[in-house]
Length: 163
Image (cartoon, rainbow, N blue to C red):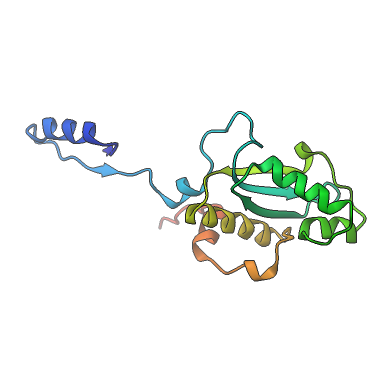
């Protein structure tokens, strides 16, 4: 079985076609591979993507996305925390519960680096779904929708029963 990667794969399969071998292709382009993060970026807060802010006192989490630098979003959250502005669900939670804010390395996690688009929206919804399922979300309830595909991806796979 070959993973299709382009012209090279076609060349190899054409050479092997005359040997009587049956050639099959597979793909790495699965939903799970598209949602999960690939390689880490050296300066994780300098790019765009999906992030998670975690309350240092109770571990409740807010998941969001930004197309600017993630560090910029952290600074915006920190600014919203101090003047008691109520512009963020995350800082609202911290203020309502008298929880601390914390440094960027303690409260912000880069979930997935990616550019703006529908792929980024899906990744964000997937991670909001994970936090909602765990009972940890601070996102607005109107951002959460039932999703059987997400449920399948976050549940541990059970072995098939054999008679």
